[in-house]
Length: 356
Ligand code: NAD
Ligand code: TYD
Image (cartoon, rainbow, N blue to C red; front, side):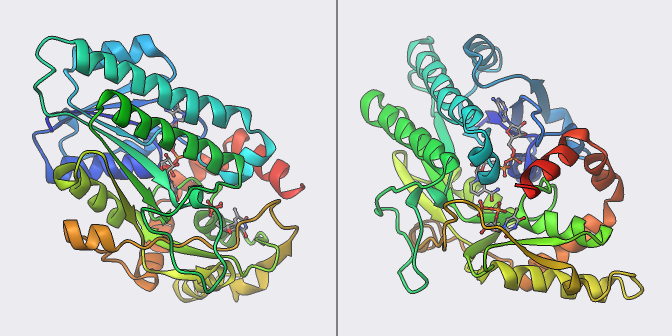
């Protein structure tokens, strides 16, 4: 792993991964291809360790000419593919972009990488890896007492987002099976931590609470997610890149299954503690039950024994400490927060989604 193409590296998980990888592999070269859509920002890439080893390229994974040029120019041996449309609620309101980025974009990337790795003189014998980041949502929805999904569980996606990610996973595996593309694939649970765009539950609740705005709980708030700290996720991806078997899939979970209402109440308690003189205290008074998300999945959970056993990984963060650190990060980065709050796109999104 010398010249790594990271796609979507200006987004939440991608930017955390770029920072992580430059920390553990200071001599690596990272080419970060990101279209800077609403959720990507160069603000997420400030103060990188070894920033001289990081090259940012603004561009689209759906552009085969650009991808081919980057592969050649930088002699890419490893691709880590994060770029995607990622928010379920947006996929419900406007699925088209999810088909374009997640399915057409992933296919463009796969096809361009295949041609380069298989046709370029000198690349046939190089050690190469295409790593695809996927989600637990491709498996559907679990009842509260059902066992967590394993790597062998069948796909049953429910939302347009989940269906587009499932399609991209199938394409990655098809390229492995048909052309021998050396891929690995990870499915992970809900991530949280620094630099997450505040359309997702945890940062949305933190920022709304700071402004004294309602904390919207979809439906009865008893849906369950397993929460994975983004740093634990980055470490797991790194181990899969270093030691995972080509053609293999690995589940990555946080071992923190909580209902949405439990998460929101925990954030409120932390804010009460951190901001004792806030006029919005107790913050739980801001909780407001709103119309449910259409087709809302009840529970996601992954069985991640395989990565524990084969790669000796397990999550380090408990949800208590991880949430506290996350709230503290948002409190300590008012400029980052203000930059998003003042964006027209963000305010328009809130208006559109929460009046629905
Ligand atoms: P994000 O929305 O924060 O970031 C996505 C990034 O991709 C942005 O920087 C955006 O500009 C970029 N992008 C979008 N379309 C692009 C295109 N056509 N070309 C180039 N760049 C493009 O998302 P995230 O939460 O960091 O998610 C990253 C990956 O992890 C996604 O593949 C997502 O499906 C997966 N994932 C996320 C979670 C989670 O909880 N956040 C859970 C499971 C899986
Ligand atoms: P989200 O962060 O959008 O992730 P995902 O849908 O990929 O799991 O949502 C997490 C959970 O929180 C999900 O069950 C939907 C719920 N939710 C709310 O109750 N209110 C909100 O405003 C949002 C954004 C999510």
